[in-house]
Length: 219
Image 1 (cartoon, rainbow, N blue to C red):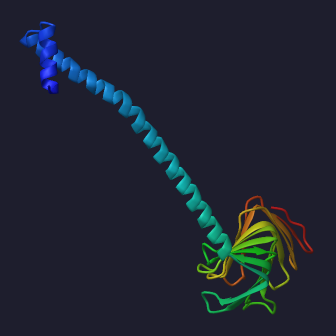
Image 2: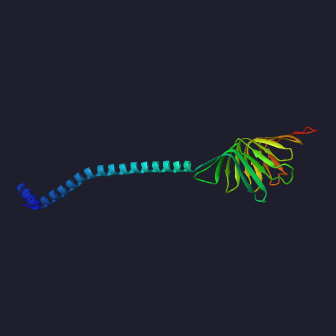
Image 3: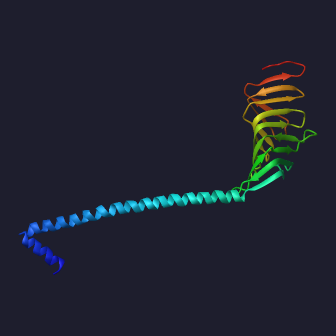
């Protein structure tokens, strides 16, 4: 006896009429569907959670591998020296006690005790910028220094600040922190400074105070 005959026998045994039989059949189908969903939904949620956790694990492994490959590809140098020419075809030399070239970005170099010497057309000595730490981008010829940054213009003037941005391509120096300077003309304090491409002009901005030799002046 097949399932349809069994269902028919049960309906006849219960005395179900045609409409009632159809209603019972609909209820049975709905009951089977609900029973299936009660088992299928938790299983589907479990599968989604496993996939999500697996993806998180894969991302973590990939990130670790990328970091490891970057660290493995980094190049460490002691007493490093970088030579080049600026946008006006003048030579420069960048020294560092230690230098580490980034494995993920070969144009990025982390420097310890950087010392930059720039050709100076207007003075017998090169312009020089030194600091405790530096970050050099070789492709853009940009150097960022911080930590007791000292700029010497080659004409006897010396300026001290905490940060400096040196655009070697344009041969300019800028600092956005307080600066103090001394030279043949006297002493100066300001909140920021910039030096043009020839080194002839140093511009001080913000709460500027000067003490000139042989005359005292405060403005």
